[in-house]
Image (cartoon, rainbow, N blue to C red; front, side):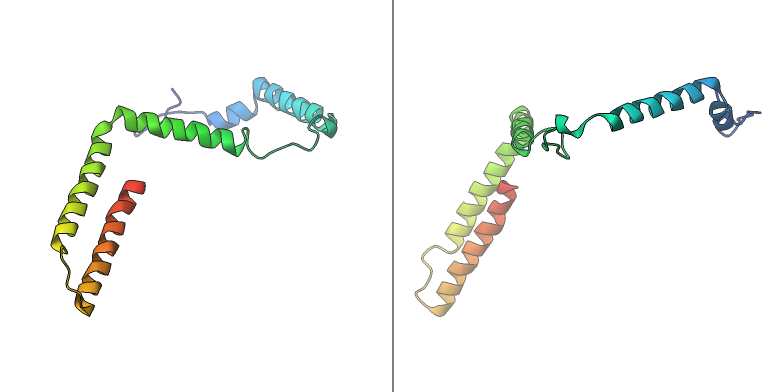
Length: 126
């Protein structure tokens, strides 16, 4: 339509055609009119409650949380795999260090097993 592509043979610079058209001038005039009207409105309409965002943080948090839970509800395989990962890891690590010795090495093994469990369960939290 505008002659783009490898075999394009446009003879006009469509950007210049648009900039020089009456419609482009009307659009610029309308934008200037809107800007001047908005600039002349009193700022007391906002009562100082103007915010950067359209909705408060709590509303955004609620909507995003509902959306994520809907996503998880619609794809339960993901949740089941995370649950299975947590249970299998806990059983494997628990039985690997079952009846740890009451020595310094046994204490180190128990602390390492706790570390491994926490690293596995952080993926569940995410």
